[in-house]
Length: 369
Image (cartoon, rainbow, N blue to C red; front, side, top):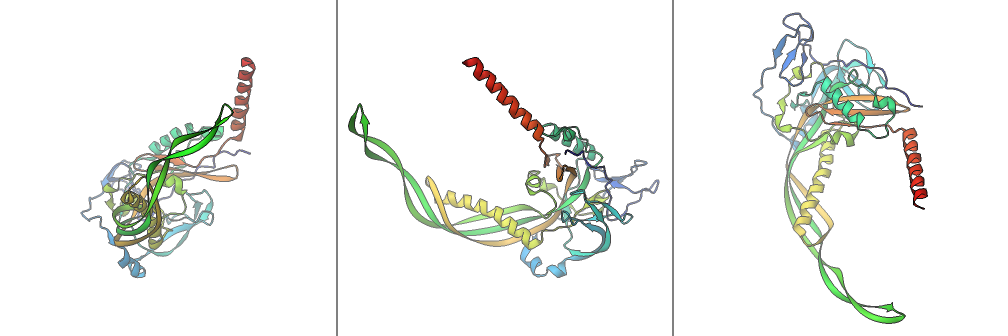
């Protein structure tokens, strides 16, 4: 049975409160600006530009002293038992729904020890623009249930700062493999023509394989790894590219009116994910180094040097809705408006389309006889 979207839930803000200088209400960060704005009297308070550099941190040094480097933060947060998300919340609420999967959660005040983000990309796309991206995306869905096609997500979209790692590394890779060079050979064969056996020749392409070994060097910059397990990875990755050249030093003011998720993928595990991405590029460079028409890679040993990292927050508008017995997530890049999401299918529409296609095919066959 098809169920409509769940009820709208109000996003809760987190971290510090920034009072309005005119009316005393809480200021929120306004996407697309560098200012906190009062939602009641429109008073604007510019966020001072920071002169702090966006620096790369030494990966192995921080990994060795991770317990000392991580800071203890007192906050109000929730942990969702359904999807595993952990995010900060405002201290004036005791329960809410998870912004990632819609499940009910209970908020707890406590402390966590994690590396604090050093930089972020502020929201540039506001809720109305994100909702417009949702409407455009959902209208383009083939065979989507009608209740989804006519849904309006603006009231439910939540602005979330999602944790990411970036990694830089110089790599030296030693490989062994084979190079394949094509050549043409003349082959003799027999066939039957007009009841007689005849001998003919034909040109056949073959490959000559030669054992090879060598070394390739690569430099990687800002290999991006999402440090959240709460979002669908395929859709989250398709929100790229991000304009990381515009990273801003971390300031709580940018988070006013939004939520921030704590990282679930640790520094070391994140680098393991980055190595998988690097490995794909390394193998491409090995194939280029081998040359020839074909390449086979038998073994690769890679050394990673000068490894650095950044812990950053990236802005994503998101919504989750339940349809039938499944939860679907929808994401919008808070900088570019790029929309991605999980979607349900209407098997009624699919069946009707198949039956219509069969009927048309039957008519065409009948008319051509």
